Length: 52
Image (cartoon, rainbow, N blue to C red):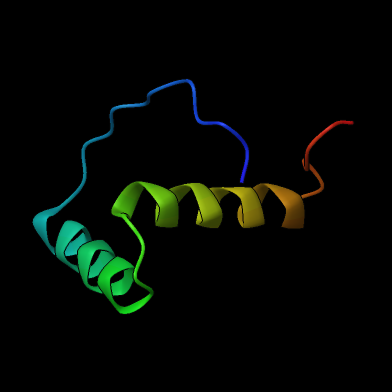
């Protein structure tokens, strides 16, 4: 995983936060790591993957 060097603050529902925490725990990841993974996969699927 690349070095994380920027922050993004977001607001979300309590339910979504609980669900993210539950999923992250089940994958033995932090919520941040899970969100980064999900966003990377989403952007790649939309054709906006990493530029090399």
